[in-house]
Amino acid sequence: MKTLQFVLVIFFATLIISSCVPARQFEEKKLEADRLRKERDECNSALENLKSHTTDLEVQMAQMTKDIESLKEDTTTFGIQYRKIKAKNDDLEKTNTTLIDRLNELLDTYSDQNENLTLALDEKQRLLELKEKDLNELQTEINEKEQKNSQLEKDLADREKRVKELESKIAAKDSVMNDLKKKLNDALIGFNSDELTVNVKDGKVYVSMSEKLLFKSGSTAVDPKGVEALKKLSEVLKKQTDISINIEGHTDNVPLGGNSVPKDNWDLSVLRATSILRILEDNGVDQKKLIPSGRGEFFPVDTNDTKEGKAKNRRTEIILTPNLDAIFDLLDSE
Image 1 (cartoon, rainbow, N blue to C red):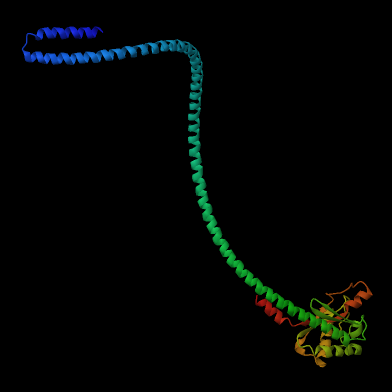
Image 2: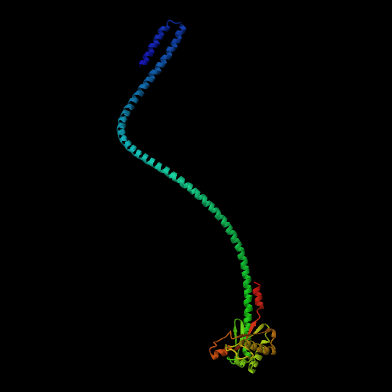
């Protein structure tokens, strides 16, 4: 309001002064006065608006004053709460500081552990590479062994085939020897078991003839009954084309006395075997198959401490052995 009055005083002063100036200037001043009046009116209108606004502001201010008082009361409450919260916050900051320190310690520890783990990992990687290398070498070895196994399986199949062939030939030889034993038993029917026996042992046929059947004590000449037995034996043997015939003379352990011939049990056993060979040869047995030998007293079949045992030991064995060339050929081919 005072500002407006001041403006009016200035205006009228200016107007009085302007009366002394020329008319052109008066007109200018008049226009200026009109403008100022217009501005005054605008100012008055603005002033009224300001008054209205001021009233509103005063109302708002009163409300704000009331609110401030209320806020002051709240501030006291909030202050108490703030101090409590601040105390808690300080505790949390201390805890946080402790946790940060602990975290840094853990990070340092983790860094060391990580370095150690890295070294361990590098070592494991090196070992893994070595194992992979070993695995590749092992795989190569396995492949080579598989090839060898394949060859071994083939060789095994060939061996099994040869074994079957061998078993077949052995079975055939056994069959031949059993058949030969039967033929000999049939041919030698009528002779007692204490005179001669026919047995199959180890794939061979043993014809064991006692001294009682063949010879008188200390003699190398075959008795007639023995000659008869040998003739019957020859009938079977000369038909066998695939055997060898070993003639073994045996004695007891009683030494021969004096300077007679034979000189001892060795001599006696050899001469008796040769006598039997002559009879077999004379009766058609191929001499190339005949093998005489003397065993003396060194292969007894019973004790020499009894009369009966000595009688059993004084014997001649004709051992019939099958020709095993085909079997040996199979064995040599492996």
